[in-house]
Image 1 (cartoon, rainbow, N blue to C red):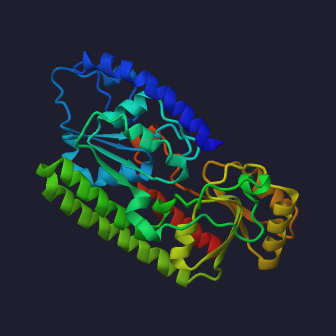
Image 2: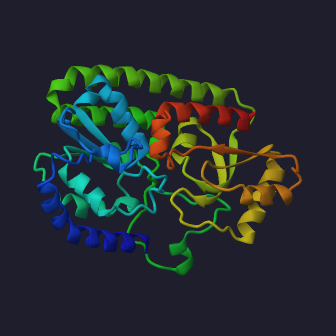
Image 3: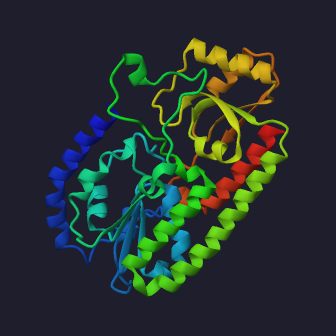
Length: 348
């Protein structure tokens, strides 16, 4: 059903796109559709003394946006970078607007995740007016390293499983950006495409990619050291669990109410009771949740367990970063460093 709604929305966008393109054709010197640094429409008007960006890059999610931003460095004066999901919209419920389709259709480089949530993308790319557009699909870059979404013991069954509907095929876990190891691979792929659309910046992109890769590798080592020294190796999430790539990287186990891509928000009595029993059995002092979720389910689990003094910790899945967050200085590495501190607390 989620995919059907997106296809309907996309069809409506495509129907309006031609009119938008015609309208924009006569005003390309008046309106800057560049992107989402948090500025409002009045600030987007192009002044005669402002140089037009030579290259445009569009990314659907914040991690890819920030990776491209870090690789651009001093080339940012020549590259217009747009974050589509800049209002905290969840990847799984995002529907492109007519303006989004326009930005994608005219950009030089488009970066997206792939998978079930991005089934609208191929149709959007068919509207492309730039014959030289380069595309990076994160799941395609990782290939066989991409994992199918899993249902662990006690987890709420997905909607399709409950309804007995036949699945079209395997559903892949889209949250690949939460693996620092994968982040290095994906940044290298983005760097390659940046060079393809902006050859003049090759030296900058190559140097920045090497420097950023070192930072990712160093943080990866810090995660590994923290997990190796930890007293516990299990996380309990009263929420969706998008961190599978992260826990698999470091040999952790987990229990959760829902899979990472689940649209469910209300857990059954059986699921809550299972998590209560695991909290008591393992003697965990913390119940985890996502940054954008309420404490309600975690509080319910704690209230019905023996661990009445257990605390609630939040980990950030980087799915709700807004344009304001970008303007305030949020970065991929900064969020992952904060997640490491939360993880240390949860495991000790």
